[in-house]
Length: 410
Image (cartoon, rainbow, N blue to C red):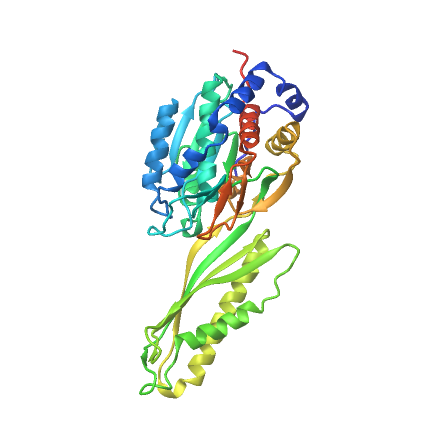
């Protein structure tokens, strides 16, 4: 566990900071510039496929755009894009981040369709709009010539979604650029203005695979069947009494196995997602999962013992996201709340699974916020985004970044 501190303005001074001529000038530039409604940038980013583990093409685009803006840019070993905007001092280091990847496979049609201001395409809101806002923030700071005390790092991460298992941000804080820590971490994930995510929703994901000899459905009837055992296990697992407090959920999202309707399969597998705001509840869920799978195997093996065949099982962890919380009283949360209210946004605290899970679990001041706009059908082929309110979101983001890094008197 690390101890971090952020040299941010206190909420008492945020109300004064918003009336700074430098901040007001930056707001005026956002109002005048087309970047306030960044349709073109969102579309360009969205139409570069970026499935987990294959984000490189989108990363190269973001790297080029950051260099055009004037940032010093590197690509780290994990594939994260890191743009550096120096301050007048070395600290506090402020990281503004957005994840590059989407949940969709490589061959998904990601061409954007327009219907008025509505943009529709897989990944348009999660997280093309977040990446576009990351670039818009860097542009706005440069054009307004805002000088901060602490440096600001603009980071486009890989591997946030699904089996990516937060690998990009995990690398940043365990082996990469920020393994010694930073003053503040703000993740931009999706649209909206109200939510300030300060609680990390923990999750654990497994691929459970049951194997057997396989055979013909008629000639070999009587041997063990992996699908039958898997079905028993799922039925029992689905009956788990998940508590409402602390909120806990589970899901069998993928089932695979078998080759033909008239063939006894030699394998069957399921992908299981378990989530809770409490690590103890996730531990209980995992123990329950292992019990019901073991019971299903023993039942199938016992019922088919006369055949001399047996099933085997393997558990492969494909995701482990830690839970945690950035307390409400910490400067980064208070800054986000007060910056929002100063701009007429009524914020609400939220719990979710985002890139912030990793820094939160390390004791680092971290939150996730939306970038403005509206969306629907997230993680589906009909996902859509409308940039309504994006200018306000960009103002809030700029105000928060400067609040956390400190506005220099130079």
